[in-house]
Amino acid sequence: MRSKLPENLKFLRKAKGWTQQALADRLGLTRPTLGAYEEGRSEPKLSVLIDMAACFGTTVDALVRGEKNAEAAERAKGDRMRVLTVSVDSASDRERVVVVPVKAAAGYAHGYGDPEWVSQLPTFGLPLKELAPDSTYRMFQIEGDSMLPTPSGSYILCQYVDDWMSVGGLRPHIVVTRNDGVVFKRIENDLPGGGRLVLHSDNPAFAPYAVAGDDVVEVWRAAAYLSFELPSALDGQPASAASLRSALDTLRGEIDALKRSESES
Image (cartoon, rainbow, N blue to C red; front, side):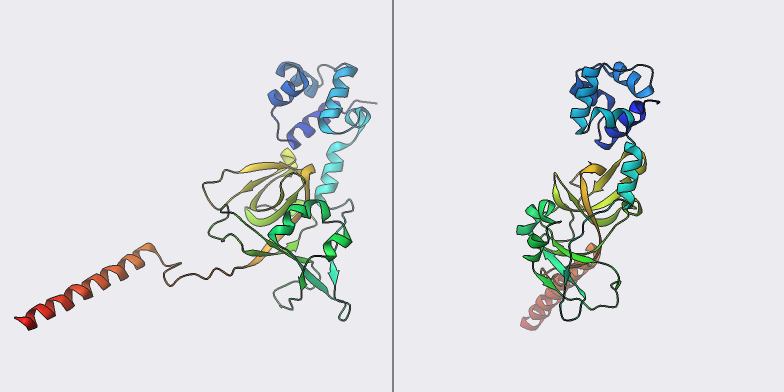
């Protein structure tokens, strides 16, 4: 049986977002040696295979003979079963929207599949025609400045995404990962080529970063947001409009002063 180590090794490395040099350093190898393994020009010793398997959290057998590419593709497309815990209204038999406040977001990555944990979260009904009746929606509260002008503390109403290959185009999503928990970002989809999602902020002060597909547990497409931070009268107007209003106020003041001066004389 032909070894699948070269393709699996390359795929798993890219899924982690590592360069050849980064992985070689972790394994105590030179980059050319690792490159030879990925190209099938050389085969590693058993001790190196054991280190590789431990590095990727898999077994030597899966690394050498497993279909890691196929497994990852199935997982991204939703072909492999994911557990989605929902809340249902006992009277109407309709799904209710589960709300994940900031305080609960830290534990969501571990409790999302636990019905008892999810049942402790607040829920509400939202009978709007804009929402697909056969979809599951959830509301996540966000914090921080990375997605300004969407203010910190806003609630993002999201639609559950089963097929992760369909996300991307820099559209806003809630992404739940094992390491980072709940984040609100725009997604660039690099699952087909690199086994990862690249997450972008709306605030240019925050640099994009990648998360491995294997680290992602849920993806939710943003549909709307709720904020209790109301805009002021000039918020949302072009800077030129605000400047013009200020100039007009100043001009009115100068005219009034001139009129008073003329009447006094």
